[in-house]
Amino acid sequence: MTKVSLVGYFIKIRKLRTKDYLDLYRFDESNDLFDVFNDYFSTHGAKRSNSQYEVEDVPNTDKKTILIEKARDAGPRMLEGVIRIGDYGYKTPIVNRQSKQLSYMRKNEDTELTPLYFLLYVPQKGDIPSDDKGIAIFQKFRKNGLKTAFLAHFSSYFEHRFPDYKVEMLPIAPEDIIDALNNGVIKEVKLTSYSSPDDVAEYYSTNDENKGKIVLTFEKGSFQPKFVDKLKKIFSHDLPIKKLIEFEWVPQDEIKVVVQINGMEKTFTMKEEEGEEEITPGIDISDSVTNGPDGFPTEQSLHDEAVKYLEFLKSYFK
Image (cartoon, rainbow, N blue to C red; front, side):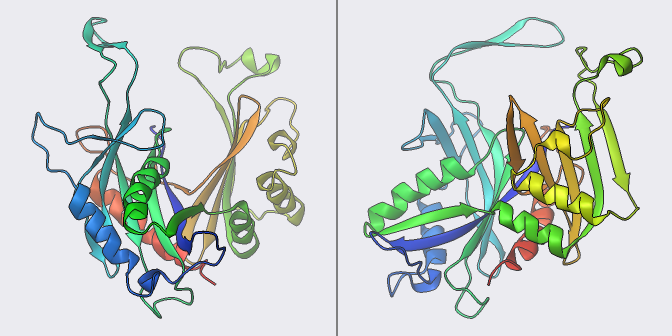
């Protein structure tokens, strides 16, 4: 199954050479960031035909491209849409996996555009306790994320109009995961191993071309405080993944924890790749979205999950 997730960021604005964040609806005493976003999408939103794509280079990135489609209202003070991102600068053969024949030789200037969904929320005065924070939710498809390219492109537009101000997008911190573990109900924990020790490999191998895996799932029971404390240490990078449960026959490469908080189930993932432990931010929605005929999640199913996630993230406003 293709990995699809939504990643949330806090949107903030500050004046250059200062540390204080400003109210988004009047960050320079007169302009509203929500209106600035609308102007940005009106300026850069591309109309495309079957043969013409108004793709742009992303400033200050390593050969990234972006195609911005028109944004639309998604609710009060909310905008949503699809942005396509890609890269360029290398040649490679594109081969049909069934016929084994060359379909196309990719050129240096070719860019493969991946569609990624976004949802932006900019509060009005009094909407929530903090007027200096908005929320951006970006889709991540496999390893393709949207935040870096979007922020670089939007910042170029924003700083041209408002040279004394800077936009920042700050990821949800590991501390928020710990808060969820403290205040939510753990519904399920999955431990995944992508390698088999010798005694297990006699019966089942994870090293063949089909990339098998061993999954140990805990569900429906109650988790003891010692177990929860270990999870907190792992997500705080104070304990290696493999120390959660020290089974000799199943070395854990990935941990998924499903937590129910404020009526919503949220999945946190910690995995080890190439010796580095990494927290996958946001929520895993792979099982919740519907794929269209092009193999990508439909916008409607992404919208439904993003709106639920937005309500969850609003709870972090202090």
